[in-house]
Length: 332
Image (cartoon, rainbow, N blue to C red; front, side, top):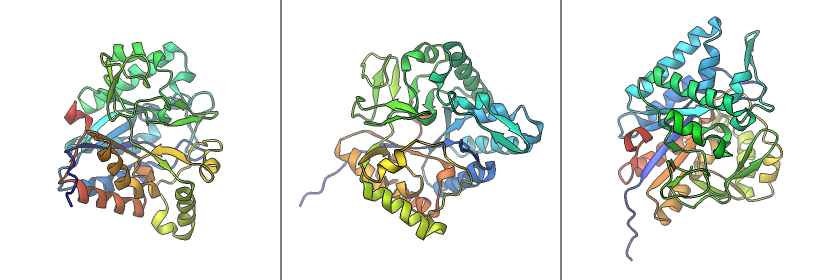
């Protein structure tokens, strides 16, 4: 029997480098510093590059509080280490940091009406994107070209079109095919996005335009059965040491999405977070069978578990000689 030979693919392992945004945001050490060091160790000695989408809003807000200077310096040092190790750093924006305050040793978040860039007027949108991008570029000493919207909330892109043009953002990686979620905080609809691993667009992230000004690198997605989520919740309770995430904060509510996933098929990212890492190889097979040249995986250091890191090691070990684990900086 003849075996199928797949072409070399660019695999982008991307990580949103951030705290939580629920009632408890967690600590920098558990959500960012420690789990990122573990990611460094997994890639050590291999030709593997990650892309870290840095949540710049946290850094800018932390600058305002002298009592946070030590942890802020540790985060900045780790970002420098990302670059020193050959990894990539790009722009991630959660604009609700604009309204966050650090009081009594705790971050007080206000995500209601401030979670998405579209919750702000156009003048504030420009100010936020421009300020955050310039801050990150000054920090890392090079230009930033690629963007990921917090919570994938990049729509309507028509609001951001002129902003991207003005600040020099060329690429986005917020979309995932067939994704849809509308709650009090989240709003995205990618059900009409092209089933492609890369495409150009102009005014609408879901509409391919061969002459478009921007590139979309969609996060690879899968259709998950309800049984997957039942296993996710049950295993987390039966074997907490293996499946408990290292991050010590709480997620922002996604409304009834969690309940819905237990009874309905759900389209979601291919991810390194927790039990989702079980599907890394399934996601790769999907994009190989589709003949794609790129695969984009999303993760969050705060979402690392013992189980997920073992799965990530296995995924890299099985594929680093077949495909190229690369970054946006190296490829664009």
